[in-house]
Image 1 (cartoon, rainbow, N blue to C red):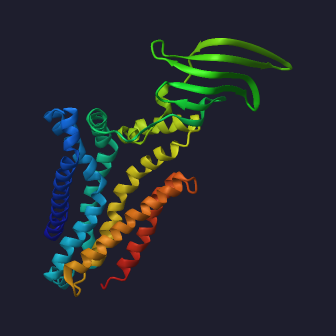
Image 2 (image 1 turned 45 degrees about the vertical axis):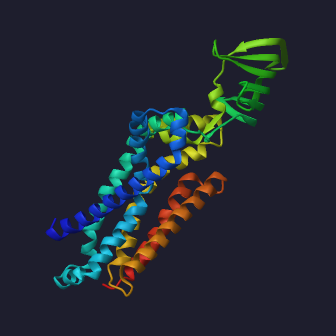
Image 3 (image 1 turned 90 degrees about the vertical axis):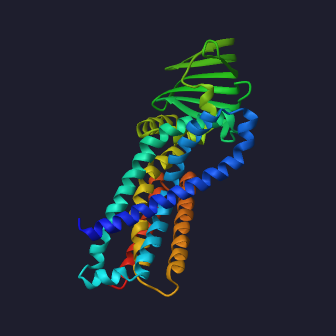
Length: 359
């Protein structure tokens, strides 16, 4: 690398990490003021607040807004260089616009790797401590238990259904367990009530009957109580969106495989989380190219115009990304396609802006 490359990379990374540090400090100040009453009411120890919550809050928040601050950083320091006519001197010395992109993409690659490692390996472990702290000392509004008409495939060919489940009593009403041999029904278990026995870690079925089908014969077994165990626990009725945030890549893949087997619709959220951990870091290159193409020219209005356009585009990207994930949750698009379509669209926008930039 030449001196000019090192000069630009230092400006890029220095501006990015400075902006990120400042916004993290501001976010922590606002978060402390918002949650101070909860800390005092629940008696949260100071060392737990500092090391279990805020120390693990920093990487989560930094990665969440890293792409946005890449964009703003590129716009900011590039506009300032353009205003000082530094690029005119570079172009006069024979450096082309394409060559000038090299240090930008090198710095973007450093931030992409940084974001990928954080999102897939560092943050999941830190989220475990942060979420545990929230469950102990903060109002946890994320947990949702129970529900109606719950279907699961607990093993290949074995399907579970319960009409309603009560979280407080760990009790389900009108459950069914069916076993199929291909498309042929092999046995069917029905019970009016299922109650979780926390001591023996089993389900107590009340007023049950079992129908076994063997060729042309049908066997009927009835009873008042049956203690049994199958691959369903009370925690499986708990929908907790923060749980997937605390899983590393391997754990997330295992969860997705299990959810696909059970047939639950929650698999969409897990797949969105998995693909977002790759798509979000990759967006660094796209936003870097857009920010560079917008700011490398010296225009009237200077820094303010470039920053305004940059913020508008960055928020439109975030908004479009949210809309795309809604389509995945509603089943309109595939989860992977929904996560990547904002990157594909803004890649075209970035290329269009770049090729129209005066060379």
